[in-house]
Amino acid sequence: MSRQWVLPEVAAIEAEMIALRRELHARPELGFEEHATSALVAAKLEAWGYRVTRGVGGTGVVGTLARGSGTSLGLRADMDALPIREATGLPYASRNDGIMHACGHDGHTAMLLAAARCLAEKTHWRGTLNLIFQPAEEGLGGALKMIEDGLFQHFPCDRLFAMHNVPGFPAGKIGVHSGAFMASADEVTIRVTGRGGHAAAPHQTIDPVVVGASIVMALQSVVARNVAPHEQAVVSVGALHAGSVSNVIAPHADLHLSVRALSADVRELLERRIRALAEGQAASYGASVEIDYRHGYPVLVNHDEETAIAHRVALDWGGEAMLIDGLRPFMASEDFAYMLERCPGSYLSIGNGDGTQHCSLHHPGYDFNDASLAIGASYWVKLAEYILQ
Image 1 (cartoon, rainbow, N blue to C red):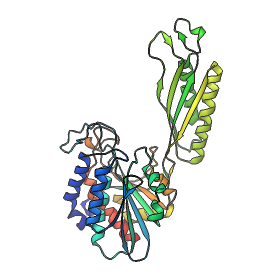
Image 2 (cartoon, helix red, strand yellow; image 1 turned 45 degrees about the vertical axis):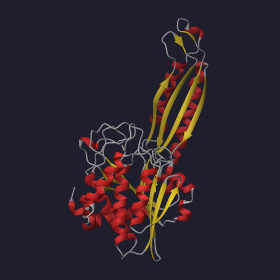
Image 3 (cartoon, rainbow, N blue to C red; image 1 turned 135 degrees about the vertical axis):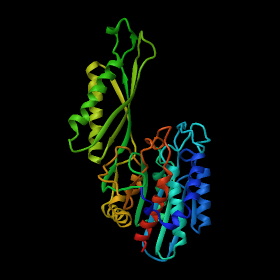
Image 4 (tube, rainbow, N blue to C red; image 1 turned 60 degrees about the vertical axis):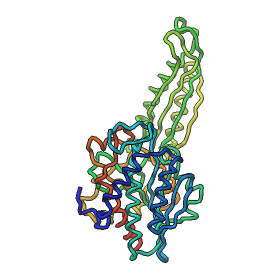
């Protein structure tokens, strides 16, 4: 990590922004419950001269600063935490038992606030800056709620960007990737109905556990034999539940699946094959299935022009050394995808390091790397200045 990637004006407030990040970390809030977080964000933005709109999409906040006519730029940070019990042992660990910032949204919020403060003090840029602080990214679709609440009608954006930390990459390095970057995420429940009975007389039953096991094995062929080798997809059976004792064959078995793809066509193919295989396997045993197929976040697709701009800013500011080399798409999902369906933009990565407290996202031992905060904030300032020339 290079301190040359930190702007002087960001360095001047770095300690304050780290303290703010840790304050957010200590009092995490779940999706659509980010009341204290939203209030803090709104108060900071108002103090720096932004016109603030609260309650967008529930607990979302938008800060707007206009300097004459020109491009309208949107920068988005997520605010919600996860229902995970923290195990970091840090002095600023969560005070809300069973809730923690295990994905770094505290860092994302602090980075954008630091950039907001610096950009408010600069007078040379022209256009409109919309800072979007989004609730409920973690599976609840806060981005879609903000859109349905008129986000882009009230705060139109010509270009839109967001950034997420990625453990395992060097702290502060910026990653860009054009095209499909994050996977769609669907959840599927398959209920197998057979005929229960005594385990000593299996011939008088239709065992849903056997049927479920057959479905699990058949599903392994979907990605291996139905998805083209150059495509990416995931079909994972996360749970199989049936019965409660050893000597009773239950009448039902429930399978719970996570299904992911990096293209809309593959996503459709996965659903078609999963349905056909589950129904076919069940029928072959004389059982039946009910399939609850829940479509979640769509594929996140970065726009070429905006991704090229993001790349250019990183290259001009920090050189090749600032860029994550060979960044590949992730099979995780992100509801910023909804925003990119409606507005040209790009979703960026920032390295979080690989230390013991910068372990994988959604882990009880995770913590956002404060060394990346000033770099991320500086990058937002440089990107905004480039676009709002």
